[in-house]
Amino acid sequence: MVAIHLSTIQRYSTKDGPGIRSTVFLIGCNLRCAWCSNPELMLPYNKLLHFSSLCRGCQSCVHAYPAAVYMEDGAIHMHPCAQHMAGELEEVCPFDALEQVGMQVECQQLVKQLEKDFTYYEESGGGVTFSGGEPLLQAEALADTLCLLKQKHIATCVDTAGDVAWEHMERAAQYCDLFLYDIKAFDAALHKKITGADNGRILDNAGRLAAMHKPMWIRMVIVKGYNDDRRDLRKRLQFVASLGSAVQRVELLPYHALGEGKYKSMELAYPIQEDACPDAETLAYCMEEGRRLNLPMYMEKA
Image (cartoon, rainbow, N blue to C red):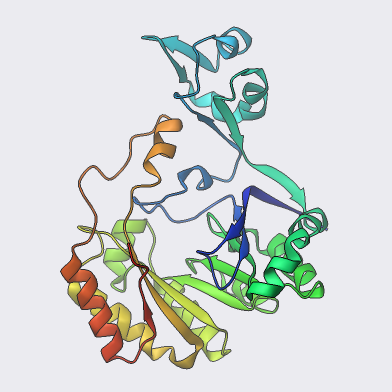
């Protein structure tokens, strides 16, 4: 059985599907959304994060690996090659200021860890959610893990942007109880501008899941200046309505800047410099338009 490449497991989550869940974050993504809150999961290899608030400037890392890290203006900085030495660098820091993100775990071992919280899942109507990154890029390992979880009577969920080959989606769907499906824009040119990829396959896969009567929670991230055009919002909601009864919930997710600190820890510039929080009028418009289309709209109160 193949291994699955993941970063972390968030236990007792209530944000990624119904009930109490364990959310498994997988590494690798084929979209490049500027507002991504998990930038460390984009590229398909382990990453090194540097937390300056924990760093004491002891230079243990510099002395051990001078080709990878260096001291300048009283602060530690990383050369690009440091990302490929994450494990080694993490080991030499005595203050936990360097952290490797990424590990390979055999599917059976992962399920053994996840089933420890079975009682919480069962009593709350929860289960296990796979997020990322784009979990369906690891289609074989994901399907194997989902299958094992179903054998343990654990409810399963996949959080996806849908930009994968249908064969990958279909394979996972055999063992997936619920899809959290992100639709970031309806217009193809706009989608490519804000994510780097066309959305034809995304919309097509959503339609195919609906034809299978696979339950979906549609997620719509709204970012001011990026995808908050009302015409496109309306078309997005109309498309979601066309998916029919498979859509059990439509979640509006206003932009937040929680990923900004992660960019800093990787010494990358945060792509969004302006205030991108959508205004209340735009959110109200979405809620009203969705309800007019008889969609099960939801937005968590701030």
